[in-house]
Image (cartoon, rainbow, N blue to C red; front, side, top):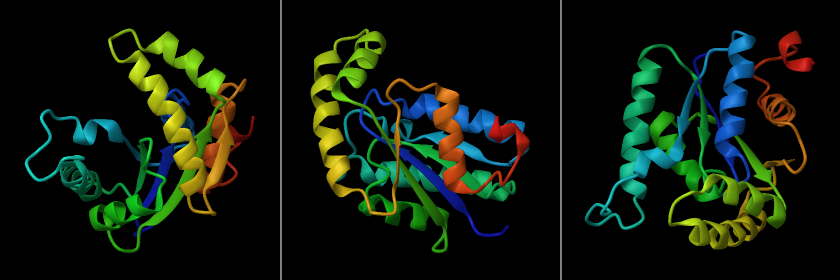
Length: 184
């Protein structure tokens, strides 16, 4: 396989993107499927925002390009990328520029009810930004629901085990074929 492929796992705060991404990676490792994983939030985590880049989009893309180049040089062709808005149409260009024009993109939108997301965020956010995360989570859930491309795979996370969610996400990629490790 020469063509790069990326699995974009998006969704509101508290939906479980990072947890599901790591479980997808665990399932792929168990099935001996070569891949890399990036937590997209870290690609632009700088303060203050770079001059001329108030939304940190340029530094995010620059960092993604550099990290992917390191992975690709070592033969990796599949990437799992977790980030709230990565599944939106406008994000696709960043992956094409960073990974190559022929990159195959699979978008998965994880969903959760307001109550589920709130419960998870209250348990996770121990610092000063809980209220901001709660408000942003509701706003972003609505935005994502309205704007993701029609081919985006939607996966409900409410009341489900992480491994079951991850199996559904892996199935959307076709990366593992019919591996017995991913069926049970």
